[in-house]
Image (cartoon, rainbow, N blue to C red; front, side, top):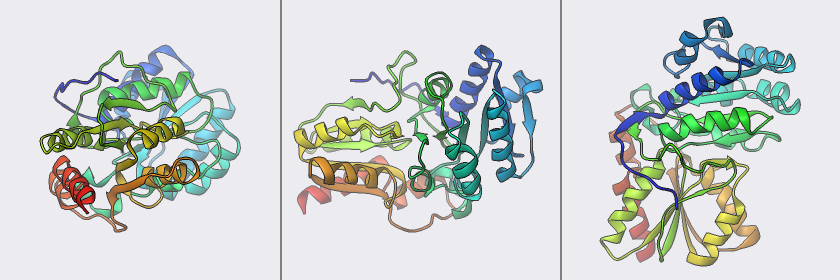
Length: 317
């Protein structure tokens, strides 16, 4: 089981940006590409440290993907970051053809993911990016749970892979709780909490909320295990099948539409391998809205209290 401890709050975008800078210090093939929102997505750490290897391309996400493809074909390892909604949707054709079809080693930072972007509202809340990108051949999708894991995920994306990678992360400061020396392997889920009654498979910021929800449920006599599915593709099917056989009740939790995201991916595995009762927690097939992160997570029952409430109602139904 992975060790965790509450170290305070830190945005996952900061962990991503610091990870890009650290990777750049070890590998001079890494180049950074910005889309006029350099600091907002954490790329300023790299830009300030290695200005000769950073290029700001303006608000032109489709062009940025094309430039990244050209750089990758020239032997570089480009890191391009923008808001997840613009990367996954506005540049979808370029990602599909230029990157995935050619299987190029380009790392895409999908910032401002989930409802917790808050005041920016529905246009900037990436809630369909996983659904759009996980269908693409050759694509790897990472969804780190905190800033420390985002930092590590970038290193792994550079060192362990040689294909397109999408790393999903948020804007707001969230609890930073994983340890620096954790075992992080792409495609292998992490056990965060043991249990006997059911298993919550969570991703991204909702991993911490799931852990807290499990503590609340424990006070009511319901012991829930928690798994951190930090890799959406390739999915750790063995971990899902094992959990289904052990617990028979599976819950997924994500800051994403219920359709097409982690919940759908888990449902596919269960249907083909080990049927189990499944509750999918996420956005209920609607767009987001403006509000603080706390208000929105509470409204859509994606915070610890809401997750615990949904699970309790489901078990008692």
